[in-house]
Image (cartoon, rainbow, N blue to C red; front, side, top):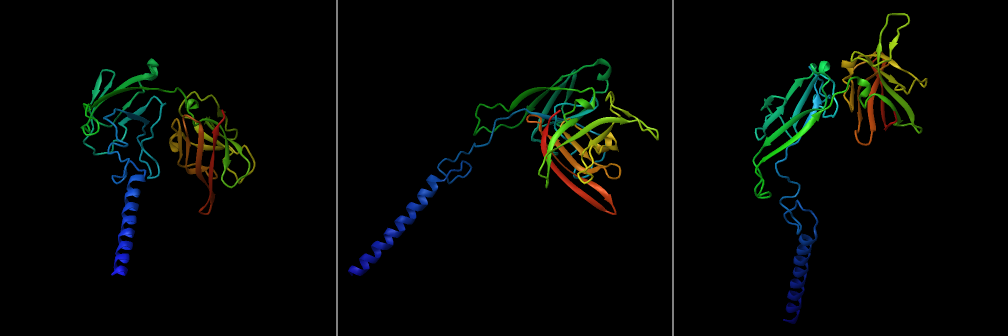
Length: 288
């Protein structure tokens, strides 16, 4: 009998330890999104209905899958600019939008407008307002009426030389120990042979895009590559898609610049012939 009592006491003691361990785990876990944790917050990460939108230069082109058709930015050419609410995805019927652009009222959640007529007037920093209506989360925000308004300003640049993607950059290429200076320039390749003069003025948008010191295998800077047309390269203020180029020129790549820190990253290919490509990656910062 004494042996049985001792055995049962040990079983109850072990069970108590196990239950206490489970209880401690629930209390001490630190995850506000986990309902089992003591600090669980069902409203964590949520926010009231908030009006916010993005603007992007848009091109009337068909894009390959690796290129984003909508690239949020803060400075644009005086041509087609697109607008969409932050977080919106195509077909989402929960967004009820009213846009105020000059005297125009737009109710589509996503739209674009051509601003080429402002070349004559010189208008800039044009205000555009979004009034957003959505069903509020009353459980987390009982005072939310489901309506919010925000105004932003459409800023235009007169030449591509004003884009962040134009200039000099100090970067380190993957696999190299020392940094180097690369350049991206919007120079117009005038022609004809044999002199092929270059218009360095950047006074218009027809200029080609020149890549300086991008070919790391040549080791003969500056290895400026001519012939990359503006549309072929899809240049935005803080992003540049390198689509196609002449033989030995950069292609199939993306260069991105952070608007706050001016840090830059890039990845692209250079065709060597016979279906052979060299791959390059770099990171660094804008210096000019």
